[in-house]
Structures are given as structure tokens and as C-alpha cells.
Length: 186
Image (cartoon, rainbow, N blue to C red):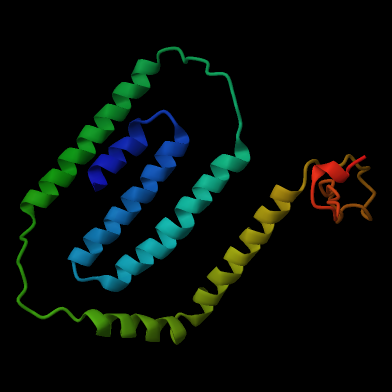
């Protein structure tokens, strides 16, 4: 599922389908983490990547909605050949490292739940400041996304006019009548 979804992300022409397949790749990666007895990492994978990153990518695609005419590049085959060479080289490197690694299977019992406790203790003691700074950064990004989505245009203003610099125009709102149906409009 991971390899098929990854191929679909790269090979499909529709970017929305590619974004959905990327969410599927992230989900299948969490399944691999579960098979490795890393339940906390699997849950974090689902929450962070499937729940946040995939949704942000989809919102970014939907908000931009930029339609541009496709202009073919001259000698595009050179880039394709270079890309194929890099991909083949990476595949050979990963295959070599996989085959040359001694995969000793341990008989030790996995620490599962105690690993989650240790991660939580580190989050709220040693790494509390970076954890909180990351949450403030995500809040600022969310507020910025809301502001960008709500405004329709940036008004033209003089360089010295700072009083209007903090005001953004809002979209006009439609008034909703208190009547039940369209027959009351006259």
C-alpha cells in the first residue's frame, strides 16, 4: 500500500488525487510503525501527518487554485533523464544498504508503554519550551491562513498612510431574511 500510494502520488496528473494518496501513504506508514511495536509513533504519524499535513496540503491546493497554461520546455528530456538517474542511484544505494545490514532479531521484550511514558516525561520537562514554541508557531500560522483566506484584495494606499495599514476589507455579507421561504419575497 505504501509503495503503490507513493507511485500514485508521483505519477498522477491530478494534484488533488496525489494529495489524497499522500494521506494514504502516511496512513500505511503508521501501519508499519504498529507492526514494529511503536504504537506512540504510529499515533503521532496519524495525528500529525494524516490529520494535519495532508489537510494543510489540500487546503493549500484549494486556496491557490491557480490555473496556468502549460508551456512545454525545450529539451525537457534532459531533466527526465537526470531525474531517472538520481532515482536509480538512490534505489541502488538503499538496496545495497538493506542487503549489507545485519538484521539481528532481538528476543528482548519491547518496552511499548514505558517508551510512551518516557517521551511524555521528556516533553513536559526537558523539551517544554520548544514544545510550547511549536504550538505558538502553529497558532500564528493558523491565524495567518485565516486572514489570507478572508480578504479578497489588498487596498492601494499611499506609502505614508499607516492608519489604514492594519485594516483589511471583509467580504460583503448576505442578509438572511427571517421568513421561511422564497414566497415571502416581494
